[in-house]
Length: 313
Image (cartoon, rainbow, N blue to C red; front, side, top):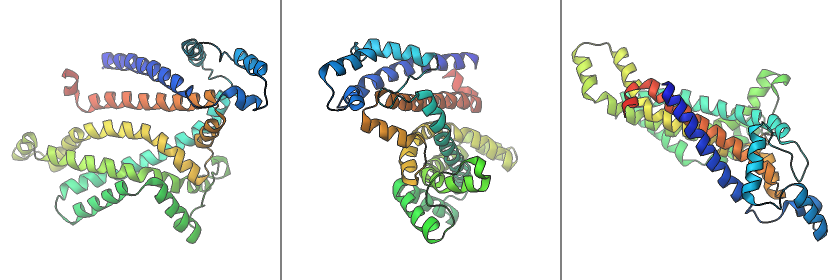
């Protein structure tokens, strides 16, 4: 297990360096200039040249990337060329909000999806299975932003159960706080409920029909114990997909945050794109990349823990 952890850390670092380089190069392909965005269209050529020299924008891209990488390794994402805002402060104020929204949506998806998939597999072909599959099809088919609009229209505006938008800090009351993120988390998580429940159902059906489960039944091993063994094996692909889903959720969270006026990373990223603010775009996307890589590395380690036989593959 220790070797696996070391391997995954080294692989993750290599991936992070490569993705960071691609991100850095692509960000500089965005039309427009940060110098013009910062100084205005009336700035002279000399002023633009001074700005680029001051911020190192006149250097080769690889040199800029190396300097930025050294700064990030020291825990400093820099300061925006355009707004002058410190990136660490920006991340500290917006990342916890986005992270909480994604975590709540992910926990909701896992807590609902796995029991739903297990029940569907145990009741294969019966009413409970059909209902679970209908829920899955609806979850996959309905776009999150459209579901979000429906949630704003009915449970929030028409029925008054939840606020239609905005974010209430935890310091203003736990109930009000969770009310403010309940609808966004539901809109974000329902798609992954469908995905994970379908995978759990397929895995459980396959495992329950395997020889070792039939042998276990013949030997008189208890039903609950057999189900536990089956679930451990069936969850291996679910954990992998769940880890990727957790990373993807950060991308979808930007849309959900925008829809519900949640002051997470969405508004900062959208504003940065409009202003050609390279550093802000890089910092936010790079943080998402780090989270995605960590979640996938964690999934590999968890899979080995669930099924030690994978270590020999």
